[in-house]
Length: 207
Image (cartoon, rainbow, N blue to C red; front, side):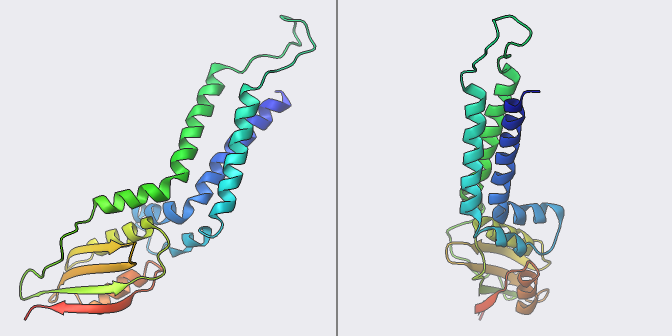
């Protein structure tokens, strides 16, 4: 195999790996929820390195495009055994598919924000009955919308939770729950179990 082909595949694979690493801060929490894992705050460590990984991602991707579509020089006569073979359509298809994967992966933080908004309502939370209460807590450690989405999914699985919305923009969770089945301490403990610490804000009860 030609060195250029090896380099092309290595740069393409490297760009995909770097893109995934750059978005682990947001992919990690969703993967943890899907797998039923508890804590996922550790993935936030990748957030500060995201700009570096993005630069590496697109540099490697650009190299893969260059190696795939550049004009190839050959010192051999056309048709001879040593002539350079053109890049196959299959390799070009892989390049286009990989580019799409890289773009989707690097855009994942923005996509997760859109997904989070789709799961929430702008209407104020109103207590349903005498057993209902609303707890608001601050979660200052959240670093992306995927974290909020994952915490929200975890809260919605708690027995006694009627509604739960976690707003990344204000780093706040609003939970309506049944006081006979759940306590504020348990709600906060459920959030803390994800690795993001919750700070009590307000609790609203029925008269």
